[in-house]
Image (cartoon, rainbow, N blue to C red):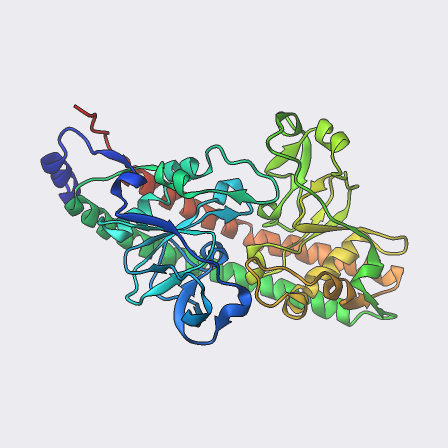
Length: 415
């Protein structure tokens, strides 16, 4: 019998109490707005809600942002062990993402953050709030429009298991070890995948830049660019049994997009401004937290619609769709570096700067030759790397399964 099993048998023979966060909270309150212009190079550490999605894991010990305390009209503080919830977001399945502060400075919480104080093991709370069961509760009843919101009352109603502190400590010890091992394995796989992608992108850029009879054209001149929308998720007729692919940022992990996680109905297409794009469209993410590190570009050989965080290109005559795709992909790093907006809660591209970015346009004969070359190289790279994303995803699923299982307890019923 393991030490954890011994502790559970000794201390919780009849099960573990499941409590609402409001019951374990010693205090819970909203932060106070901190604007982008109030961020300084030094001063008091602070967290803005968007950073919870893009910068921090389930716990952190240092803030990446600072502000002048005197600039904040009604400062709200957090300290060691406090839980931070982001109560505004873009996606229902990510709303109320939480992280725990385990540093030792007094910090400021920005607007759209809920701070929860408690007397439990901070890391245990961070682990349990990242489980599948907790995430389901966070998104329960939320409706996706353009922005998703949660609230202090909704946070207080989240139910979690609360075993004795000695059991919490042992679970944290086990999960810390498992987390470290998983992170090391994932980092190795990710580094290999990144190296393959860099090699591929370098090859693309070199071939396109050295093509004969080329001229430099603005991205806007490649064809017709359009945006998308999110049909109201409150209207079931727009989503239930939908068959029309609807592309969002979460689908843009692949370069050749042949299906999506979500689908809308013909009713949504007819009743909203959603536009059905033709086959062989190029899609680019222009607003998302993932723009912090990369510019996702996808070639879409199917008819599909997109959400408002993406832009779609339908090329004009004289340009091959795949040539336009490979050209944007080849210069993705340059585009991101030169057109991304500074600051902001969510990373985004400057629309005009993006459309004015210039790329090489080859003759039709050279376009055909370049596409043929890059298609073959793309196949070769996919053969070399196809197992890496799957292996990374498998490690992630294995970790989540083990974590959720470790944090599932027999519930102690009230007497």
